[in-house]
Image (tube, rainbow, N blue to C red; front, top):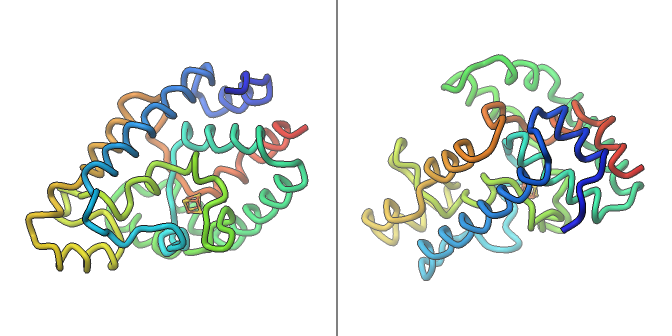
Length: 217
Ligand code: SF4
C-alpha cells in the first residue's frame, strides 16, 4: 500500500474525511466484504452482469467523498500526469455539459424530483475503455452492487432491465435472496465519514480538480 502523500491528505482534508489512511483502509475492507457477499449470494444464477457489459456505465453513477478519495489515490499511484490531465479535461467538459443538472442535484433532496434530474445526466463514463472499467479494482460501491443485489424498499432488483428479465425467468423467490443493496450502502455510510453527499464523477473531479492535479505533480 502506498504511503499517504501530503497532496492526498490535503484532498482528504478538503473532503472533510480526516486522516486518509484509515479511511482508505476501511473502504478497501468494506469493498472486499461487499464483493464476497455479492458473489456468494448470486453465484450460479447467471445474472447478466459480466465483463464487457457497460450499460450501467452510461448512466449517472453516484459516489461519496470516501469513494472519490480512493479513486483519486489509485490514479495518483498508477496513472501518468498526461493521462490524468486528459481525464480531468473530459470530466470538466461533462460538468459543463450538465452544469444546470449538477447544480440542481446539489440542492434537491432524495426523491422523485432528484431521480428525474439524475436520469437526465447520461454520459459515457470517462473511465470506460473498450467497454471495460479502467479503475475496476477501486470502482464505486454502486458499481459493485448494481445488477447483483436486491432493493427491499422498492421490492425489485437493484439493476437494469437485463437483470429484471433474468430474475423473472428464475422465479420470484430468487431476487429477495440476493445481497441487500440498501444494507450494503448503509454499511458504507455507517463506517465512513462524510458519506451523505453523493455526486457524479464529473462533479467531484471538477470541484476538486486543483487538488487532484497536485497528486500527480
Ligand atoms: S468508474 Fe468504472 S464501473 Fe464506475 S461507471 Fe465508470 S466505468 Fe463504470
